[in-house]
Image (cartoon, rainbow, N blue to C red; front, side, top):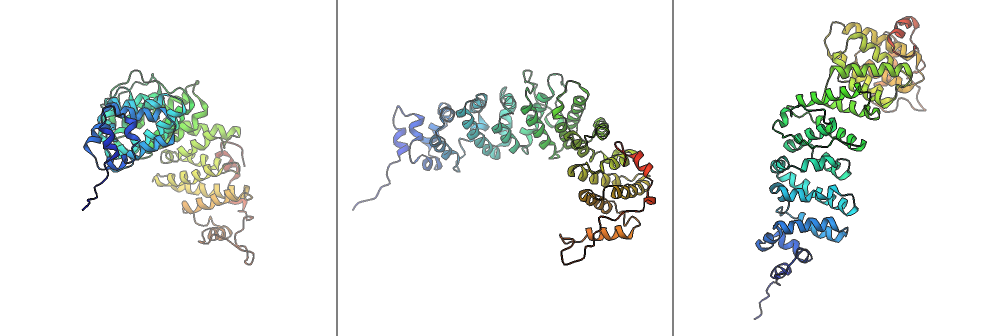
Length: 436
């Protein structure tokens, strides 16, 4: 009687050879299957530091998709032993990151593959990988020096929610952004971070922009104990606007970062002055003004009455774009949150601003929609006009279509408030730019 015995493993047969190489093992057809079974002999071979480096070398030196696919077949199983290298070994992790410092196509392809491996390892061992980065003298520098490369930026963007690792990385990234003149102690979130004396400042616009975007993403998460870190960032941004040598092309990006980091009195005043200046020279739709007005959304509760009224009156204009107009509604709502003694007076002035703006720009349907939203948001009722009340009623209807060819039009954009319902001279005094 014949017994059917399983065929001997191709991998295990190769491992019996004294001159067995890493590429010999990788070429075996049953490699993934035996690796998935966590075979002791195979694991001893693959986890040897020399053979791990061989795997990384193959990724770096060949652009053949078949070779990358063969290696990735190991990393895509439920056996995560090879991933664990990033949590256990500083030298091997630094070696894995070496493709980042090269600019050839093979290295870029390898970096993309290794970034996917690292992302999975972070899911399993975030604290251990933080320790590897924290204790290494090179890993943070390698990442920051190459932050302009899409594979690095995308990988970091995908792990911003990782607590320990990202706190320290964001701190070093900010230090590289701020340059050698910034020498404050690390914030509470990474208080024990060591100094990196040879950390290079970011030396091109792409690195700076990517750093700003990552910091913006980081602060937008509203993680705890970031107040002192945010204060560093906000004070630095304030210094950017005071320096005549600063790159003005990125000013609007810095204000977007400031909005994520929080309120700062100096930036509040800078934003107001930027809007005033733009209103007077007709550049109200420039990116810096759009970002300034967006930042002022979080400053509204600290505004005085005249500033709030002038800002809103100035921006409610046919030349203002949609994004800025939407910010105006948010600013007005946030002003109302503050229970100041002048809120009643503010509401009365807002009614007059809406009446005046409606009359002068009633051919601009976008602006009219903003005025109706303001009326609703500030609970200004009907502005003592039955015709406007009818428009407001139509605007608040749940149907998307206000009227059809078979129905009478109820929304009257041509309606105008009596000119006696507001003081045009007073309205013009409020506006920082061109009068009505």
